Length: 330
Image (tube, rainbow, N blue to C red; front, side):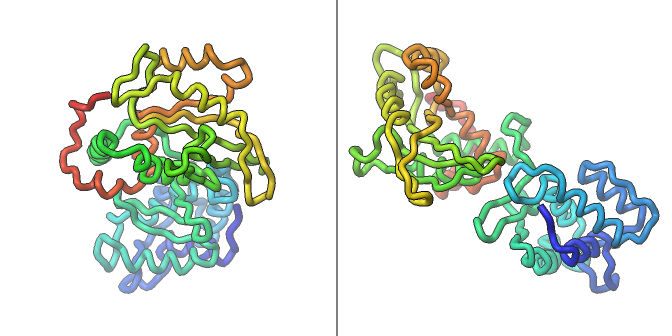
């Protein structure tokens, strides 16, 4: 990923604070504080005593050349640079919302097709204007959660208890998969079952080599187990066995290339737990080739991915003030 030299020079000026002190929205950073800045970004760059603006611009150019978790997007390190630069505790000549600093930064970023904004967690993120893709440093769904994140996770967990299958798809899964980088996400819905062919959603994902993989998703709201009889809130894995076979064997039409394509992988997504016995039962029924094509995502996966990617909670989840989920049925 490359930015114009003019853009890098202007961002470097923001980092250095090269403005009249009484008018600047950005703090002034001498040599020592520039080194401290890039330490906060978790890099080893150390100012060498040369002209500050030129050195920072060259450093930003190196950072943009680092590997990115998003194809043709700025590196994760560059996104961290923006977050450290726009830390609300560094507000200068304005309040902590930093509206002036944000407007100045966006005037520069607009040239490259990006926009900075503050999210609910009060951190600054980048958005790719053309695709509306929100760029964040790689999100680890297995890391410890903050107190605020744990509360949001509890609110979302309560929402999953009461939402319908269609709401699970529309309010949770579509925004989640879109944020994770999938393309052409299409929900079949439940109004016309004959058109689903075992798929509630189909989508595609572009590999770094520009090849496309196609995914079909079968969604169940509750727990997925291998018991002899399903409870009202649970689904038996045998009930989706034929749907998985249809998903993997039926072609879908991709209007972007004008061709029918086969699904490469099947996602089985459950709003509750997917038991180990259910996974083992399905693996035993599918042949080797189809078995390798099936992936699972259960309640914990959904909750963790949704929270670490800082997606906005559905409106009805926000109405819940208590995030305690000790009494959940699954």
